[in-house]
Length: 308
Image (cartoon, rainbow, N blue to C red; front, side):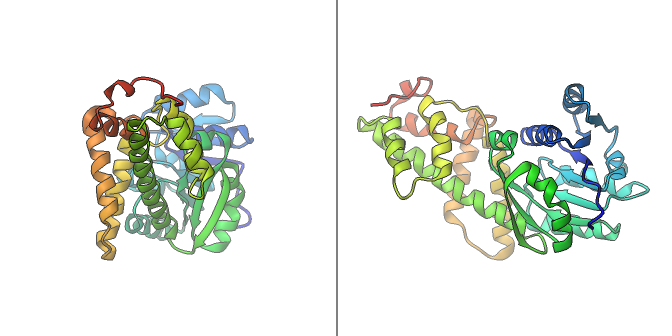
């Protein structure tokens, strides 16, 4: 695997995370052949970068040694790899598929097995981080797969991630990504409740978040979310609908492994309620709006937060 051509790679999925990841790779001097279900998104990138070209089908990506998947969900990944014009149906399969989408471990294992049947190695490498982190190459990438293959694609992953963590030789990366997101959801939900409690008691968001961030339980995540929470800016980093999809995967995986997850189920209900209110395309922080409504603070929902 040491002879992989990492200069020009195939990339499928130019969505909310895929777009900044693609641009990051191009800015680092890589050349990419791009495929997206909505071709216009790939064309928009190719119009800006000389190093990007647009594939007419997923099978066109297979001419490259490495193909990266950053699709929305499992069916989209299966479409790229397994459909009649998919990557694995091409005359020559790529040497490595890097699955960076958030999918469940059992589905990831099926995709790995399909790749191996064509003599193609498979790296499970889902990402943790927002669109901002993707643009800046600061994602955390949780990677698993055959060690020599991981080492071979590591320079490519390091172009996109500030931290690349090797976690196993199978599809452990996809299980760990779901487990990380579980904690993000629970932590976020607690923050929204605490903000509302303080606001009802006359303490503004900025004051509460300053104290939280300086405390032992302040985190890089809480500090990153602070400006948006203070401004009531719900520009998506992780959309409500996207997290709803991830929580479906958590519950599926919990059922398969025989693990009860009552807190995860509660957060999932909050996400589903947010989507049903029309907030599906907003950031998860938009769930704060319902807490404010329930506390009789409707006037704060569309207003910049107070620093009291």
